[in-house]
Length: 163
Image (cartoon, rainbow, N blue to C red; front, side, top):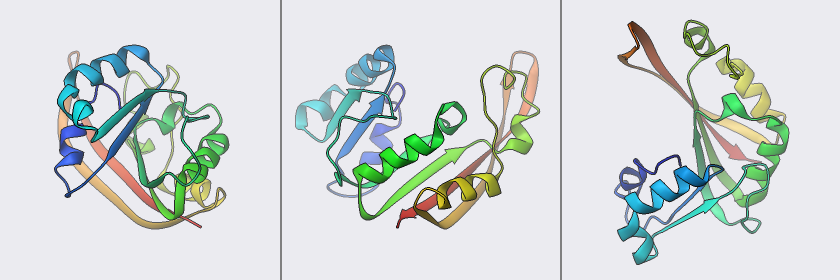
């Protein structure tokens, strides 16, 4: 959940949404807690510090889960997807959003620890880990400035169902 900036957007997307965020960085968890103090106090939001390879949640705890720009850093993608499978209810939904490989290869920072994926590669990874891809969205976004360079930005969002 990073610094929790978008939690408010998730909460207003539907009535009665309960949000549980997980991040491995203590600094990000603390910042998200400060930013979302009101929601934490009401019980609508729970934030925890944890590695995604071993989340501190019971089995079948969630209807939906999503992750944004983290696949690039998963050391063991099969272990992470097994963990998502564990915490999702039967037929639960997992959304994975990444920057697609064809753009990432043009970014100056990707040689430093990023694993890059095409749409087809993500589909294969999901399907080999007990998920069925049910929707794919590719969306161009406004260009962004990084240092003195303007870069093209696009999101690849893959929606999969636990099988």
